[in-house]
Length: 224
Image (cartoon, rainbow, N blue to C red; front, top):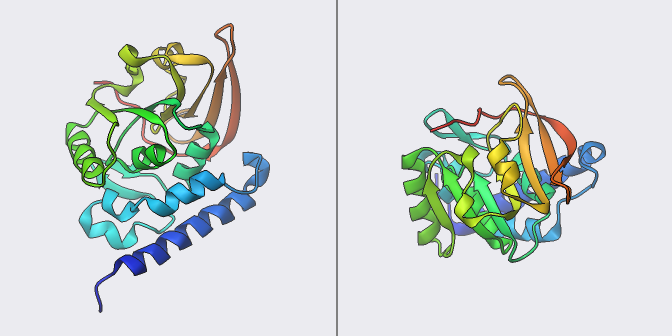
Protein backbone atom coordinates (compact mmCIF):
# COMPACT_ATOMS: atom_id res chain seq x y z
CA UNK A 1 0.00 0.00 0.00
CA UNK A 2 1.22 3.52 -0.81
CA UNK A 3 2.11 5.81 2.08
CA UNK A 4 -0.41 8.53 2.96
CA UNK A 5 0.38 11.90 1.40
CA UNK A 6 -0.65 15.37 2.54
CA UNK A 7 -3.24 15.34 -0.24
CA UNK A 8 -4.77 12.13 1.11
CA UNK A 9 -4.81 13.56 4.63
CA UNK A 10 -6.49 16.75 3.42
CA UNK A 11 -9.25 14.68 1.81
CA UNK A 12 -9.77 12.76 5.06
CA UNK A 13 -9.84 16.03 6.98
CA UNK A 14 -12.52 17.43 4.67
CA UNK A 15 -14.52 14.24 5.12
CA UNK A 16 -14.22 14.59 8.93
CA UNK A 17 -15.59 18.13 8.75
CA UNK A 18 -18.47 16.96 6.54
CA UNK A 19 -19.34 14.25 9.09
CA UNK A 20 -19.24 16.83 11.88
CA UNK A 21 -21.67 18.94 9.87
CA UNK A 22 -23.95 15.93 9.44
CA UNK A 23 -23.97 15.34 13.21
CA UNK A 24 -24.84 19.00 13.81
CA UNK A 25 -27.77 18.71 11.44
CA UNK A 26 -29.04 15.48 13.02
CA UNK A 27 -28.73 16.91 16.55
CA UNK A 28 -29.92 20.42 15.66
CA UNK A 29 -32.87 20.25 18.07
CA UNK A 30 -30.51 19.70 21.00
CA UNK A 31 -27.73 21.98 19.77
CA UNK A 32 -29.97 24.81 18.62
CA UNK A 33 -28.32 25.19 15.20
CA UNK A 34 -27.92 23.06 12.07
CA UNK A 35 -24.23 23.60 11.29
CA UNK A 36 -20.99 24.59 13.00
CA UNK A 37 -19.74 28.15 12.69
CA UNK A 38 -17.88 28.74 9.41
CA UNK A 39 -14.80 30.01 11.25
CA UNK A 40 -14.71 26.75 13.18
CA UNK A 41 -15.11 24.69 10.01
CA UNK A 42 -12.17 26.53 8.46
CA UNK A 43 -10.07 25.99 11.59
CA UNK A 44 -10.83 22.26 11.59
CA UNK A 45 -9.71 22.09 7.97
CA UNK A 46 -6.41 23.75 8.80
CA UNK A 47 -5.35 21.79 11.89
CA UNK A 48 -3.52 18.51 11.09
CA UNK A 49 -5.29 16.29 13.61
CA UNK A 50 -3.11 13.31 12.68
CA UNK A 51 -0.16 15.07 14.30
CA UNK A 52 -1.99 15.32 17.65
CA UNK A 53 -2.53 11.60 18.19
CA UNK A 54 0.01 8.81 18.80
CA UNK A 55 1.89 8.11 15.56
CA UNK A 56 0.51 4.57 15.24
CA UNK A 57 -3.04 6.00 15.22
CA UNK A 58 -2.45 8.72 12.63
CA UNK A 59 -4.30 6.70 9.98
CA UNK A 60 -7.42 6.80 12.21
CA UNK A 61 -7.15 10.45 13.24
CA UNK A 62 -9.98 11.65 11.01
CA UNK A 63 -12.49 8.97 11.92
CA UNK A 64 -15.40 10.25 14.02
CA UNK A 65 -14.40 8.36 17.13
CA UNK A 66 -12.39 9.07 20.28
CA UNK A 67 -8.82 7.75 20.18
CA UNK A 68 -6.64 6.61 23.08
CA UNK A 69 -3.62 8.79 23.78
CA UNK A 70 -2.26 7.01 26.87
CA UNK A 71 -2.78 7.08 30.65
CA UNK A 72 -6.38 5.88 30.13
CA UNK A 73 -7.20 9.16 28.35
CA UNK A 74 -8.59 9.86 24.90
CA UNK A 75 -8.78 12.67 22.40
CA UNK A 76 -12.48 13.41 21.97
CA UNK A 77 -14.59 12.29 19.05
CA UNK A 78 -14.21 15.07 16.44
CA UNK A 79 -17.93 15.93 16.53
CA UNK A 80 -17.99 16.33 20.32
CA UNK A 81 -14.75 18.31 20.36
CA UNK A 82 -16.03 20.61 17.63
CA UNK A 83 -19.40 20.99 19.34
CA UNK A 84 -17.79 22.05 22.62
CA UNK A 85 -15.75 24.73 20.86
CA UNK A 86 -18.75 25.88 18.83
CA UNK A 87 -20.82 26.22 22.01
CA UNK A 88 -18.15 28.50 23.48
CA UNK A 89 -18.76 31.05 20.72
CA UNK A 90 -15.20 32.33 20.67
CA UNK A 91 -14.36 35.73 19.20
CA UNK A 92 -10.80 36.69 18.22
CA UNK A 93 -8.60 37.94 21.10
CA UNK A 94 -10.87 36.60 23.81
CA UNK A 95 -9.11 35.13 26.84
CA UNK A 96 -9.75 31.38 26.93
CA UNK A 97 -8.82 28.83 29.60
CA UNK A 98 -8.67 25.19 28.52
CA UNK A 99 -8.73 22.53 31.22
CA UNK A 100 -7.24 19.30 29.86
CA UNK A 101 -4.70 19.96 27.11
CA UNK A 102 -4.14 16.32 26.15
CA UNK A 103 -1.76 16.29 23.19
CA UNK A 104 -2.82 19.77 22.12
CA UNK A 105 -5.39 19.28 19.36
CA UNK A 106 -8.17 21.42 20.85
CA UNK A 107 -5.59 24.07 21.78
CA UNK A 108 -4.53 24.26 18.13
CA UNK A 109 -8.14 24.71 17.00
CA UNK A 110 -8.71 27.40 19.63
CA UNK A 111 -5.55 29.18 18.48
CA UNK A 112 -6.77 29.05 14.87
CA UNK A 113 -9.91 30.86 16.06
CA UNK A 114 -7.77 33.68 17.43
CA UNK A 115 -8.13 32.89 21.12
CA UNK A 116 -5.59 34.13 23.65
CA UNK A 117 -5.14 30.75 25.25
CA UNK A 118 -4.06 29.42 28.63
CA UNK A 119 -4.23 25.62 28.91
CA UNK A 120 -3.66 23.33 31.91
CA UNK A 121 -2.85 19.61 31.80
CA UNK A 122 -2.48 17.35 34.84
CA UNK A 123 -0.39 14.66 33.08
CA UNK A 124 3.16 15.97 32.76
CA UNK A 125 3.96 13.75 29.78
CA UNK A 126 0.97 15.11 27.86
CA UNK A 127 1.90 18.70 28.61
CA UNK A 128 5.43 18.11 27.34
CA UNK A 129 4.20 16.41 24.16
CA UNK A 130 1.56 19.06 23.54
CA UNK A 131 4.06 21.85 23.96
CA UNK A 132 6.42 20.29 21.44
CA UNK A 133 3.70 19.57 18.89
CA UNK A 134 2.17 23.03 19.12
CA UNK A 135 5.57 24.72 18.88
CA UNK A 136 6.67 22.59 15.92
CA UNK A 137 3.52 23.56 14.03
CA UNK A 138 4.01 27.25 14.75
CA UNK A 139 1.33 27.79 17.37
CA UNK A 140 3.10 30.44 19.41
CA UNK A 141 1.74 32.46 22.29
CA UNK A 142 -0.13 29.57 23.95
CA UNK A 143 0.55 29.43 27.70
CA UNK A 144 0.67 25.85 28.94
CA UNK A 145 1.37 24.45 32.37
CA UNK A 146 1.14 21.22 34.35
CA UNK A 147 -1.36 21.30 37.19
CA UNK A 148 -4.82 20.66 38.54
CA UNK A 149 -7.11 22.22 35.98
CA UNK A 150 -10.03 22.35 38.39
CA UNK A 151 -8.15 25.18 40.13
CA UNK A 152 -7.92 27.16 36.92
CA UNK A 153 -5.12 29.66 36.41
CA UNK A 154 -5.91 32.50 38.79
CA UNK A 155 -2.91 34.64 37.82
CA UNK A 156 -4.45 35.26 34.40
CA UNK A 157 -8.14 35.38 35.35
CA UNK A 158 -10.75 36.45 34.56
CA UNK A 159 -11.38 34.49 31.38
CA UNK A 160 -14.01 35.20 28.74
CA UNK A 161 -14.40 31.50 27.95
CA UNK A 162 -13.51 28.27 29.76
CA UNK A 163 -13.43 24.86 28.06
CA UNK A 164 -13.31 21.82 30.34
CA UNK A 165 -12.53 18.53 28.60
CA UNK A 166 -13.16 16.31 31.64
CA UNK A 167 -16.31 15.74 33.67
CA UNK A 168 -17.30 17.01 37.09
CA UNK A 169 -20.40 16.49 39.21
CA UNK A 170 -20.71 20.26 39.60
CA UNK A 171 -18.78 23.18 38.11
CA UNK A 172 -15.54 23.64 40.10
CA UNK A 173 -15.94 26.81 42.15
CA UNK A 174 -12.47 28.07 41.24
CA UNK A 175 -13.41 27.99 37.55
CA UNK A 176 -16.71 29.74 38.20
CA UNK A 177 -14.84 32.42 40.14
CA UNK A 178 -12.35 32.90 37.28
CA UNK A 179 -15.07 33.30 34.63
CA UNK A 180 -15.79 36.88 33.60
CA UNK A 181 -19.31 38.28 34.10
CA UNK A 182 -21.01 37.55 30.80
CA UNK A 183 -18.48 34.78 30.18
CA UNK A 184 -19.24 31.22 29.15
CA UNK A 185 -18.03 27.79 30.25
CA UNK A 186 -18.61 24.49 28.45
CA UNK A 187 -18.21 21.43 30.67
CA UNK A 188 -19.60 17.86 30.96
CA UNK A 189 -21.51 17.65 34.24
CA UNK A 190 -22.72 14.51 35.98
CA UNK A 191 -21.61 11.17 37.47
CA UNK A 192 -18.92 8.87 36.14
CA UNK A 193 -21.23 6.78 33.94
CA UNK A 194 -22.75 9.56 31.81
CA UNK A 195 -22.85 13.34 31.86
CA UNK A 196 -24.69 16.20 30.22
CA UNK A 197 -22.65 18.52 28.05
CA UNK A 198 -23.53 21.83 29.68
CA UNK A 199 -23.18 25.49 28.76
CA UNK A 200 -22.86 27.84 31.73
CA UNK A 201 -23.15 31.62 31.36
CA UNK A 202 -22.22 33.91 34.22
CA UNK A 203 -24.68 36.68 34.99
CA UNK A 204 -23.47 40.09 36.23
CA UNK A 205 -24.48 39.12 39.78
CA UNK A 206 -22.25 36.00 39.64
CA UNK A 207 -25.05 33.45 39.32
CA UNK A 208 -25.09 30.96 36.45
CA UNK A 209 -27.46 30.25 33.61
CA UNK A 210 -27.26 26.54 32.74
CA UNK A 211 -28.22 24.80 29.49
CA UNK A 212 -27.86 21.05 29.05
CA UNK A 213 -27.17 20.12 25.44
CA UNK A 214 -26.77 16.35 25.17
CA UNK A 215 -25.57 13.21 26.94
CA UNK A 216 -21.82 12.56 26.74
CA UNK A 217 -19.23 10.42 28.46
CA UNK A 218 -15.89 11.86 29.63
CA UNK A 219 -13.29 10.79 32.14
CA UNK A 220 -13.59 12.59 35.46
CA UNK A 221 -11.66 15.73 36.25
CA UNK A 222 -8.70 14.75 38.40
CA UNK A 223 -7.10 16.67 41.23
CA UNK A 224 -3.34 16.83 41.53
